[in-house]
Amino acid sequence: MTTEKRVPIKDWLEDDRPREKMKQKGAAALSDAELIAILLGSGTREESALDVARKILQISNNNLREMSRISCDNLISINGIGPAKAVIFMAVFELSKRFLTCESRDLPKIQSSAYAAGIISPILRDLSHEECWVMYLNRANKLISKERISIGGISATVVDVKIVIKNALDKLASSIILVHNHPSGNLSPGENDKTQTRMLKEAASLFDISLLDHLIIAGDGYFSFADDGLM
Image (cartoon, rainbow, N blue to C red):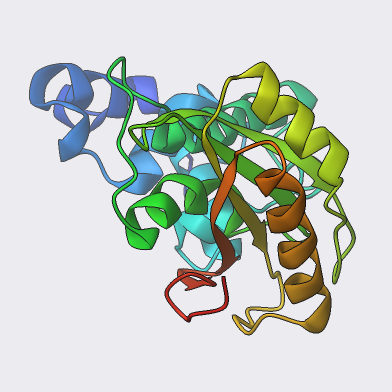
């Protein structure tokens, strides 16, 4: 029985090497595995960078969203990925998330709950814990900024009304949108969600600040208090 000898990527035909292929045909021409192989840079004595890339995709069910949830420790457990490469991957995941939520130089105008959810959802939809964020808007309903207010556990987070109001005043915001996620995937608001919404709305009104909506993000979906008549 003979063992097939691994051929290093540098010895492949030029058209088959991920880096050369990208230079010639552009990034869009590469498969997910080839793009990941470029990030890895090298493989092991037994496996090429492309082989290791395929392993990462395999444990992620060939789903990039699932891959972005892999922890640093789980990445390091894969043969061919050390701490340095794992950190690079975590940085790429974070940059991707920030790219999806970055604001253009022209402040985006929030015209609907769907538009607001589209801006904030990439930050919250894949988290395994709850986080509370606030979107601050000016008088023209243009987004001034978005900030995380608190981090909770698996099933709850706390809205600190004083911090939200202080931040809104500091930014001269005219209105705000409260946002939090449900890692369980359940879009229905709980009684605590309703109570916190009412408390924040009442407090904000004392400073002539409007609470326009409270969004719950769960997976690819969202629930809007305003759309459902709960404001």
